[in-house]
Image (spheres, rainbow, N blue to C red):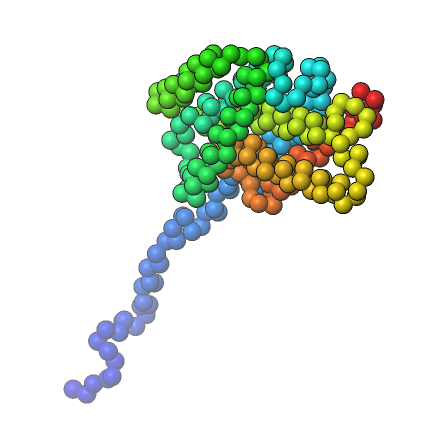
Length: 269
């Protein structure tokens, strides 16, 4: 018989090919991506609560405490109120340093390296603030050593037996230390510029180049101090902000220090 040329696989007349099966699109490709968590969005802010508290502390509270204590320097004795505040702030920072992180808190290797690098400057800052606190309280050396050993033992207990702390709790613990450290810096600058009193050490420099060099030294010193006693403890509590963000925060701190030195003179205090 003569072949018609029609394939044996052809569909009968009047019938159509069944539609091809289409794979359903996964929900993960259809649903919109979730918004970033609030904690991640908060890191985009240039200024956080700690920045405003620190600026207010050095601009307003520290000059008032400085005068209430009779103009005591950062390492002068006979200032029990300041000594108590400093040691309490050191205790909070030690708890933050010893505490374990919450298991649900995600950390990256880059963050942990940065935090470990900040521990060294923080330990130096703790030593300086602790010494100033013991000195202000006129604490005998034997008692101070016993308290330091007790604090180290307490850190071990906190780390191995204490509950883990989240980022918010660690930030709250380290903030008083940051504020006290900022107040100490204000006291150092006040001693350099001759607070209290009318004439300042910088104003007494006749040579403008020498005055500019002195101002540059103070600015550089404040940057090192800020990195050691403000940036480092806050990074240990929680990694936050980039280089530009921290430069802006440092500028706010410097403005607070200058304001704390200026307004008492303008008011004749």
